[in-house]
Amino acid sequence: MKYLLPLSIVVASFASCKKEPVMPHEPVITLISVSPTQVTAFGEPVTIRFSYADGDGDLGRIDPDDHSLWVKDSRLNTADGYHIQPLAPPDTEVPIQGELSVVLTPLFLLGSSEQEVMTYTFHVEDRSGLRSNSITTVPITIMADSL
Image (cartoon, rainbow, N blue to C red; front, top):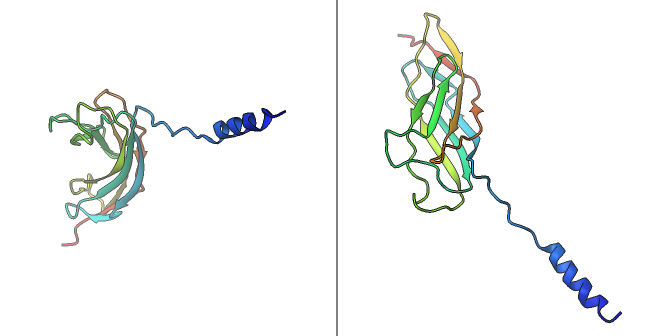
C-alpha cells in the first residue's frame, strides 16, 4: 500500500507527457490569400500567399533553373515552374515552416471575350522529389483593357 502513491505519481507523470507533433517528410501547403481576384489583362500581377511545413527541411533548391513550385493556369495544359531558394541550409535535416508570397506574371485573355474566369492550382516539390498537396485558388476574373 505504501508503494501505491509513488507508483500512481509515476504513472500520472507519464500520462501527462505529450509527444511533440511530428511533421511529415513531404511538404504540406495551405492557401492564405490570393490578390487581387479581379485584374485587367496584362495589368497588375496576382500574388499567391501560402504557408508551408516540411519535416526534413529540404524545400527549395540552390540552382535557380531547378523549379520547386509548380503553378497551373486552369485555362492552359501545362504548369509553369518557379524557383524557391533553399528554406533551410542544404546540408541539414530540420523541420521548417513558414509563409511564402509568390508574385505571378500578369494575366491575359485567351479569347476575344471581354472577360475570362480562371483559377491557379499549385504544389511544391522538395529536393527528395516528394510532392506536396495541391491547392486551387478562388476564381480570378480577367477583364479586357477598356482603352
